[in-house]
Length: 634
Image (cartoon, rainbow, N blue to C red):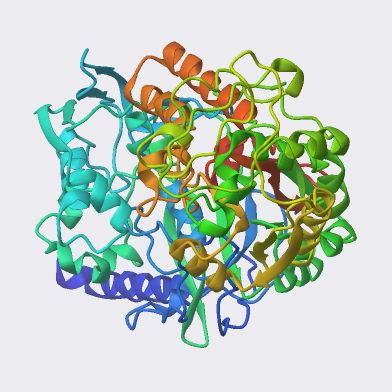
């Protein structure tokens, strides 16, 4: 009987073999045309994070089947997006410095928390969290319906594993991550309960755990120092997010893109059961925004991850391309060098007020940054829950500025402590100058002499000269034509007060170095909140951040610092709103720096793509917050 079945069995075996071969050789229907491998990365922005400098080689064992065929992409359930830069490591713990990696990993991995359209922190892999009364312990209850892309359950062990990696002295990622997490203890109290112990209160802690969680069952046992070389980072990134890797693409031996599909295990979750009509996401990398726009015009891509200011005109003139706009997570300010002897007069609040009133912020931002930024009216982002609108900023009034400066001393005597000036409301100087201020703190060894009587009447300044003092002052800025024009307009206003103002434009790298060295009189700076969603600006404006954080000019105002300390310590949201309101009001009253503009972020997409909504942004990857609703029409 068995002998009689031999020939049918052989025929069946041969047919099966031919079918497998046909499937392997069958062309893919994705319709992508791999671009030429880029030669170098784009230059960094004025306040950049480090970018990879070399092309990423395709893994030696990358199967040929993962190379997509060269056919035009058609809309439907596939979205092909152009990104400017390189795919380097698809590991959320190592993606800090690469926007391309951050975009892609945000779809593959999830954190314990996420943000909503208002920048509020909401649960993601955590169901909820509580904080101890002293603010030193956070307890996160985890969801129990989450699976990794390979089907294994997500547990507290994965959370503990991830954050202990970050705190390891040998962790190869960003120093800022290691510095935070080496001070935090993390323990699993059960399979679904995790406890974090902090050394000091940090109200923004729920924002810190938005970073993607990685699987302990995949990376466990890997020496920390070898994490950067693990195949997981490119060939097998396994997460819990809505999309999972399907294919890497390459050309010329270099990785030039990636193809993702909606993860089946995510479809089983309530939030994945409906929507996500974009079943496949394909990212392709380009050298420049101009190359990405050309790819759109050629029908190779449907969207572009971000349009820089220099490419806006081209984007606006590209047929079929829609632009979506929101405020980028940055604020442009002019800072003073409070520590530089030649300009220590900026420690005098009346001088700062005069400088502010001499600048037409509304007009100059409209003239020089039209279309790429909007007027800023707070040191916090206008899309944040902590933002306070309609603050009483000093109005543009050159005549008033000159009159105020005439009563303000620009001469500082070394090591002579003098009382704070008492300023009347009619002079529009910051109130409560009798309180402790930077000018009267130990950190400020030089203070302005009293310029008014205790009754509030003006006193003639004791200045040994007949003509107004004309001091030279240089504004440092990045060599961006629009920013140079902005600095020149500010300088023109100050020249009306008798200052001799020049503008020095330098490269982004030199600007960073000069700021860190304190080698400037005044400087145009874009402070970036990225990648944090919490509005905490402690690192920019607190006294203690001079020399260690980004308080480059040594801005030294105790009252402002106290407001930031209170907001950072208090975990109660309503209380933090009050603290940040006080911070913003003090900033507008005391003008320790000139708040100028909010840069805009532009996302470009095929006009047929519907459902795109841009709200609060902590990073460009937040554009995918509404991805569940995206779909093509027409």
